[in-house]
Image (tube, rainbow, N blue to C red):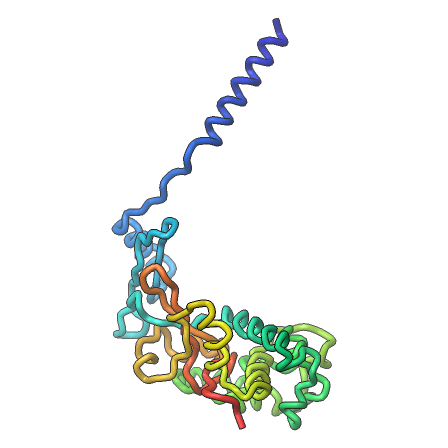
Length: 277
């Protein structure tokens, strides 16, 4: 009698488990009013000045909204563009590898080919720049750069200025290729190397290799006063991400990204309107 009872009990457990596994997942809370209230409450808890928020269930848009201010006296709206910051590094590295496949540039090419007078350029390769093993000091950590950035939050720095902050002391963080440390300077230099190697601006290269083929119609470099006025954050808040990088917004069920102004490069980034002379 013991064995049949045990077997019956096990079968019952299996049936219960199967029913539980087959039960459909609970539907997400898709009430726009409830969602908006949740976002506002969380923004207050975190002390966030502005929030852009979107929710989709499958392909159906439930809510796209913005709360708070993007800057003092400027309300945040769901169609405002914003800098995507470090995400842009994946854009640049992807572009680089595509150019490598075409034979336009080599990962093991010394950058002295494009920067003959730059500190240790004969020892630094393109691969080292993209892998942050080049050893260039991060200009973001230079005291007078940080002070100037705070004093003039809307100032745009050229790539040459940013690189100079890094190398003017004549010292590397470590010998090229011997260690790894994140450096915005590596990205600035890499952006310029790509532009000089191809003879094209980052704007044109991104459009040709990434934005166009992928249908990223709302991802772009921002370069006009009008687009800058619609950006969610002042330059200083995003200055530490490449100027050769894109920035973005959300509108409808799509996300937008749009790079920095056309007068800066990668972490100096995407603000370059073209290769430096």
